[in-house]
Image (tube, rainbow, N blue to C red):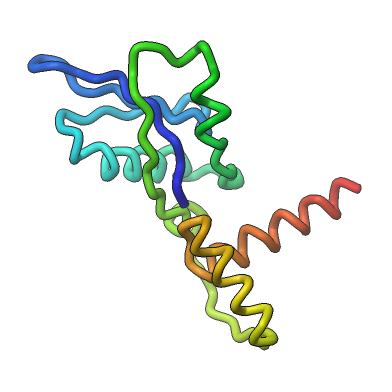
Amino acid sequence: MLYPIYIHPGNATEAHGVTLPDFPGCFSAADDWEAIPAAVQETIELWFEGEDIEVPDPTPLETLARDDAYEGGVWMLVDIDTTRLTGPSKRINLTVPVGALRTIDAAARVHHESRSAFLTRAGLALARREQNQ
């Protein structure tokens, strides 16, 4: 899933600092721009380790870009493997009408998710909404 991150560019003696708005209190750093995605993935996995918390949905980048708290840096979208944050998975079989499956797959592509990740996120969102009614 694509998450926005805010980068405070480093220099020859300082690493690039990374703020992860959707993960409060979670920060990362990397010496090279190319190393940022892997550093962010590792940091988020450590942030979740031993915690019983839900993976947040990404905040739209256009919302964060208007926030005055973020100045002097640049935004980047990083593809976070959220399946590595919630523990082991269990394979199941589903029967879904072909038309519905096409719609689900198209929506998953828009969100840069696998079919499984999209269905899990959608199912959890519905279950949570119904629990809060």
